[in-house]
Image 1 (cartoon, helix red, strand yellow):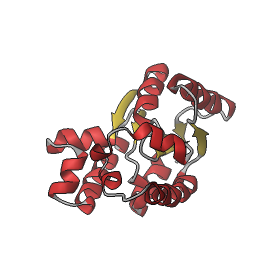
Image 2 (cartoon, rainbow, N blue to C red; image 1 turned 120 degrees about the vertical axis):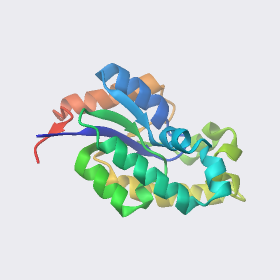
Image 3 (cartoon, one colour; image 1 turned 135 degrees about the vertical axis):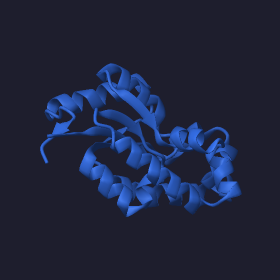
Image 4 (tube, rainbow, N blue to C red; image 1 turned 30 degrees about the vertical axis):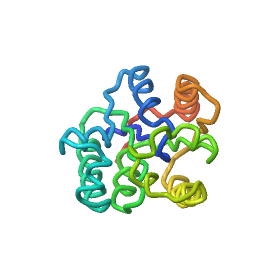
Length: 180
């Protein structure tokens, strides 16, 4: 048997980090945020990495962070960066080693949650909300194709979202472990 991690995927602002921390605490698991992992290892923010290098450079670092997170022997809750699903190798790795939960939200909710666009490189360059909605729609297709199940975070507290995830895990008898 090998360990199954719980990976949270979804668009920026969906609540992956907030919900991931709470979920990890409630399940007694360690928590890893791939964006935080990259920022700590590189000594600069995601926005700075995009600005000084490129999105491709960041995606390579993000993929390495995901591989490191999935390599842990004990199960972890992993909050994945919003673009993690843009690389097929990341999707394959997630599907092999994790139970994948997509956190979804309506575009209007996303705009209300973003706050400082400058800290989100793909949004900082957007010229309109239509561009952001278009990116969300394209990513949503990838999230749906990757996830084992999805949960809306619209107008819900993080605790409520986590309770829904735990309920789903219990209903479907996921014990964060699978046979190879």
